[in-house]
Image 1 (cartoon, rainbow, N blue to C red):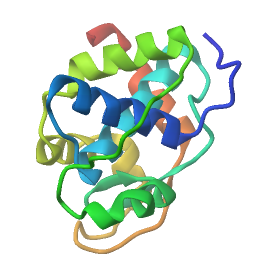
Image 2: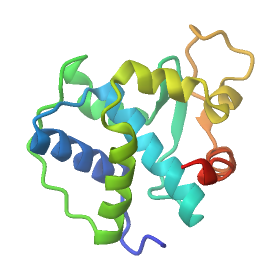
Image 3: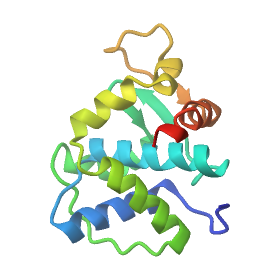
Image 4: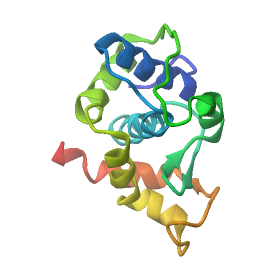
Length: 154
C-alpha cells in the first residue's frame, strides 16, 4: 500500500485523538507520540514506505516528533481534548485500526518503556545516558529493519 495522499504526522495524531474521544478514553501527548511512532514503524515494515515524512527524535521519554509535541504541549500530562475529524483514506484507517488494536489499551508509560527497549530508539541514543536529552533522529531505515524483522511475530 503506497500512500497516494500526502499525510502528515498530525493527520495520524488526529485519528488517535478522535478514537480516544469516540470510545470514551483519553490520550496524553506522551501516549500520542508513541501511537504515531508505532503507526509509522509498522507502515514502514509492512508496506515499505513511510506513512508521513516527519522524523522522530530519540528524546528521554522515547520517540517524539517535536512539532507534534509542541502542538499539544499545553495539555501537559492531561488528556488531549481536541475536537478533530480525521479524513483519511480507508487503507490508512485500516492500518491505524490495526495499530490501535495492538497498542491503544497500553498506558503511556508502558508504551514509553516498550519504545525505549527497542533497537531504533537505542541506536539513535547511542552512548547517552537515559536521562540525557537528545535530538538525534531515529532513522526510518532503522525502524523499517527492526519492525520488518518482527512482522512474523504479529
